[in-house]
Image 1 (cartoon, rainbow, N blue to C red):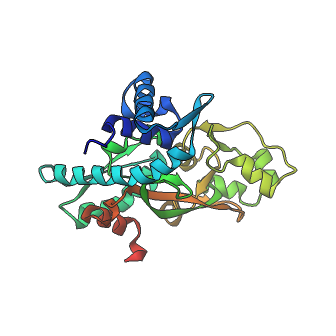
Image 2: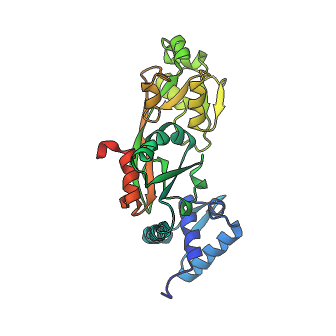
Image 3: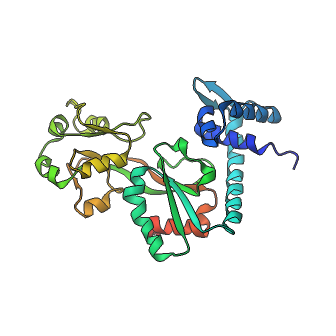
Length: 296
């Protein structure tokens, strides 16, 4: 197969296309940025086409890169899955799943306990991260990620819809449950989720829809992920915006209470994302069974 380009160049191309950054691709592949640049130039010379254009600190893909990715990403996914199958013949049957701290603590782990109780042959290892760019796909089997389901070259299954409401501990909720949206934003202690990429709903989105004339207080607690926001709410420290399907167990158990009936929703959500073919493997089917019991 002398027509095949170097595998390192293909891996660099896949990471650069997905992350739209040489720097992030280098971080994910644990190499220096000059190595990534060299591999992309090598691939462009081999193919005779331009793959990326510089856009400040980011890059944009050419039409040729779009076409090449659509053809090569599924093949790379199949190579990765086939390699894992062979490795697993001599390794323990462990599935590695990456996701965000809040999803891991309040949604995934309670459901994965079923595997421990029902399937003694399969174990699940969870690693957490705040940023998708920090996920090393060659070191995991699947991930639960937030988005609209658009992960080219990977299988995606929607697990949780985005439906966000104000939530608080019962001790705090009893004092605030009769406040109007305007009064709540002005006087209640708010827990702010900081997100530089503006991917998730925050209090400014909630204010814009339900109390557009009110002024959003800048006071309160600021955290960098949903898990910390929920933890602070459980401690009675303030009101957080909670993804209802993520924390439904806490609501059903009385640890958290929804305030207001006003909710924000979108077509986005949390998805189970995996290399092509994994979700149809024995391990993938078991993961799907635990996370989507209603589909059985």
